[in-house]
Image (cartoon, rainbow, N blue to C red; front, side, top):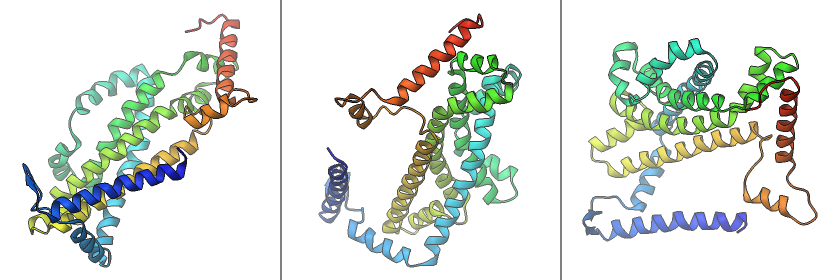
Length: 296
């Protein structure tokens, strides 16, 4: 199936879901699931058009995006640093590791009372909740990715005279990058869940705050406008993280069908990148063997 056909299938899937929604709500279907209280698609679309034309909608949008971006970037930097330190240093593992394991099971949204007591403003507290939500997925993913690296790569760099800094920048961080990106992808989704919940509890502006306000005044089309907005924002930010991840990991072999098709096309050699990776591993293995090191 080519790209155009796939886009057509996706559009039809979305259109079918909207059509089913319109049918169930317009007919006030009540078959255990009660749709008579739901607004129709046309009512939500009309409310969405009215909201988009006002300044309040864009202010809420700006506030929520600012909180997400600030908390997520802080979590990305801190999570990579802490995860790498715990994986590479026994001292850091003994000092920080137990604290992480105790705090990690606590849902970020459960820290709202702590944020209210700890920070002087609600804005800082919501950013703290967002930071906490993304920090642990990034930290855990980074820790596992660093520990999974083949020791022969580091040994090869050290054999050639590289120090700890060279190992960190040339082996550890590039090698752990796929795992880090997985943590970032999970973290951005969890951040959206927590920032909307925090805005509903203690926010003054934002998409979550506005959605809850619409619910309290029984404005159900407004509630669905907020839900649609949250879904679109989450989709856009997740896509941005994935696209950025693909760009910074161009050197990785791709296991997609397109790559496989190119590799197996008659008259072509197998994909270059896996061969290059295998050659690099073999070279590093030979280097370690020549220096008397044990290959894992």
